[in-house]
Image 1 (cartoon, rainbow, N blue to C red):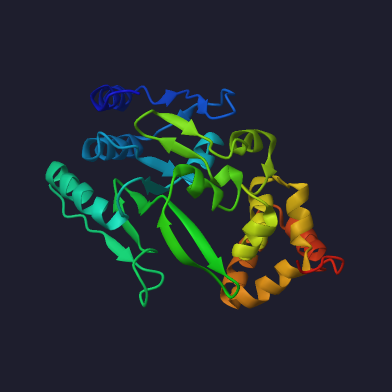
Image 2 (cartoon, rainbow, N blue to C red):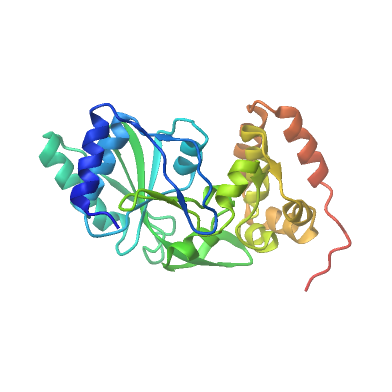
Length: 286
């Protein structure tokens, strides 16, 4: 464990020009990956985050980690918090930012289910040109009729990883340890091998949110990755197709189809859509 003071010092050194660095993965995979290169805005942002919560494990989640490991730029930063909501954290963060920068940045907190508790709220704001979402680590449960979680509770990093769509999107970058965390044990390996795999049984992952079927096809088109065999089997299951019709709006489906058709591998998307448009009738309800 590194102290916050040493961590901030290293960040400051990189701001002076040392921006490329290697980090080892934690978890079952220990392979060394290409350097993650932080731009100046990310260095300033991460320094600010560590300043506000020096004794907590603040994690950057999902797509930012994936894209950085692939050597791509990413303007969207998802912050995963251990012990408080995004709304509470953002107040302290923006107060410190405004004090340091002499600005007046503000946050917007949205609730996906305003008629119920605020367990689904996400706080969004922009700092140093980065679009930021802040939310707590969580575990979720779903009903048969909605892809919106019925219950959300504070969770562990493992539980938060398991609820995500693919292992490559379940990676964390821990700001305090400055290491990539792979709680599924397969995310880094799948990223290296170009595999799209769900963190848990794909029937569970797709049954909870059937839109992930189309997201899988989109990622295959955008990244040039291969869908894992168990995912392919689940994608043909008639129960998943029934859930897709029952749980997902036409607008959401249309948005994913549009992204597939504007990707670099449209032919791959068309082939996969045609392949999975015919559900297997051999699957039986359990």
